[in-house]
Length: 228
Ligand SMILES: Nc1ncnc2c1ncn2[C@@H]1O[C@H](COP(=O)(O)OP(=O)(O)OP(=O)(O)O)[C@@H](O)[C@H]1O
Image (cartoon, rainbow, N blue to C red):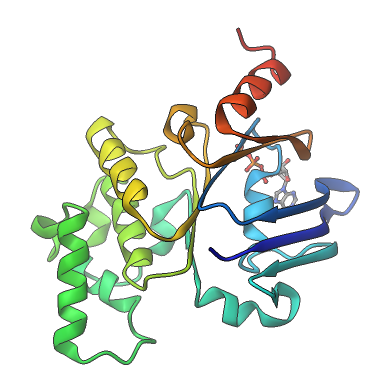
């Protein structure tokens, strides 16, 4: 698994601190980031592929310093945003997935095969010639994930991937995630979804307030917010 290191990484917007100085080493396969709204979860994960920069401190992905080598890191890290609309770039579902492969000089036949394989895995074959913009919110989310997975990244970061999914697609996603060989970091409020992950980190008041096995961290999170 890749190793992600945060060394006193801190994010400030003027006087406001979105993430207090944070030191972490992430090397487990499946890691959940949970916690209150506005606690700093998205801010933290955006540092991993250089979408955000620390105001002070450092972040490294597998020995690569994000401040200097973000481009190299982005080739290895797939990021799925909470609003999948941001990721749609092509006129059809199949083309949108194929677009992710543009940097990999694959023969056309092989590219087509990879796209078909991933369409099948995500149950999107029937929709492949549709415009992505007519898909439902949940289907768009699956498409965004498919477009990330098709490049076979070393790490997948997903920011609230289950928010728009119905039960069937949530189960499908759970199943897909459980069969992935890659490292996975998921920001979520869906606590049940990450119960069996290898590690959970709870951000509270813009700092890591709990870190460990998901069951323990979820229990601590509930205590922080006074949830019965
Ligand atoms: N570009 C920005 N400028 C100013 N403040 C920002 C910016 N980005 C984030 N923030 C603030 O930083 C804080 C942390 O935001 P973040 O999106 O990381 O929270 P979160 O834990 O992901 O929340 P949620 O569960 O609601 O998605 C919030 O108060 C947010 O308003």
